[in-house]
Length: 631
Image (cartoon, rainbow, N blue to C red; front, side):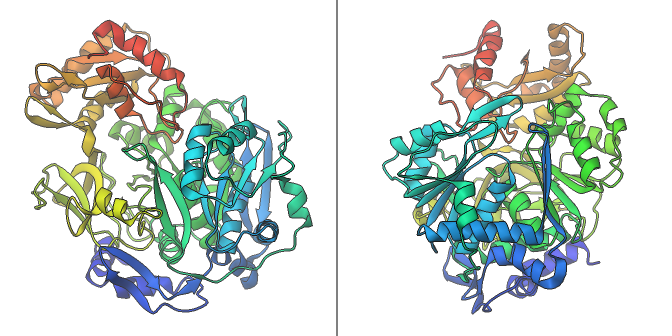
């Protein structure tokens, strides 16, 4: 086994040789002309001239190599009380017929297809069918608001939309078809066709001129073969919210994506073909693209599609039940899922009901994992708990404890070291290096490794402006943090969340770490609303653990003292409030920017990805007694 340091060094000293070697694990119809094409730097392309098909690499190759009866996908839905398994052969056949039905209706290479679906196997089949055809998929979170879906329809201009009659959120049935119809009515661009999967929980009304019944058209279709595609052809567009209100369409190519993700399964997650890998995410997020739909199948693992929640479907033992039922070896989820489980079941009583002995590792990402949650997960599960850091734009981990290379010592609060392929630097405002331990802007020296975004959808200039111009020669991550003497990274906050208190630049992440260490606190967030005296002043919002029976004022007093003791008076931390819950996106990210606007009394737009918009009203009522919102 090579050491992390050795592989990282090799990947940075000779990236072309390193990635050419990793690319040998992928099936190519034609080898590349150039491993790294820098002819249009700072826009770099990997494996230009090469031809492959991502769906062939994810499904057909395993069948052809005699592994067709191995389980490719497990569907586990506590909300419909359903479990199903699909072998590689069965999944390939279903995907080929869906691709055939799409092809018969005119979808081909380069056409866009929007996928607007719940967490069901057909969502993954839809993605793979697009990859098979060379159509570019854009998954929009099922149940997303109609106006937001319309914006994406107008930007991607899809030839077809694949959807379902409904999604199920806990005990609520959410009708998708009225949202889809409203989005198409609103959008300037109109798709030619829609395939709608009728779920038994709710039937959708159909537009005969435009809509096809999914099952009928697939049953009648002839299977479609994989189409050879250029490595640099787009595989998908994934929209991420933009600061201008216009969403940014992150593009992922076929070649670099397949190479990087296949490499990551063994080297980061320490998986073996045939084992069960569970990314407890949604296909609407980048984690669902990379580690539900693609990476596990590229590597020959079994992937798990879970239609449920960490708590409430039916209880805080939901994750333990899934792990035990399906012999999950590696779980990848967001820290917020574990904070929710811990809040409802702090003593992990539910864990004792299940045999989770097969679980080897827990990986956390999506938001910075506070040391307290990390420690609870380690003590509860008794396995390596790995906080790792990546972005929608990169598509796979920038920093991680790569268990397949070498298990590094865990440092709570750090996602460990840069992953091979990533040359991570901490820069000051002038673009110069900072000393070990000093806060700065986190940037990645170009070129980014394979698998990362080559550009934004039909907008090279916006890509350069948003990511490549602040520090020429570097990709701007938008995160702030530091690197210690051992090369361990600490992601302290988004650059926007570094607050300026009377001239002192302070990290909200450092304060959150202190608040989270209090024994009564389940989760927390620190924001920096406007302060007439100091510019900004930190405000803590905390959710208490289930069963805490103390006066809120006593807890707040202790929290203020705790920050004073651990960070010092410079933090000027004087305000905290106990709230029932924090506003989050459906992937678990806390909506700090929206909370700050609310606390400042500014106009804010309800984010389309919010889990429950009513939380913002609750929050306003909680802040009012302590003098927020401020104008």
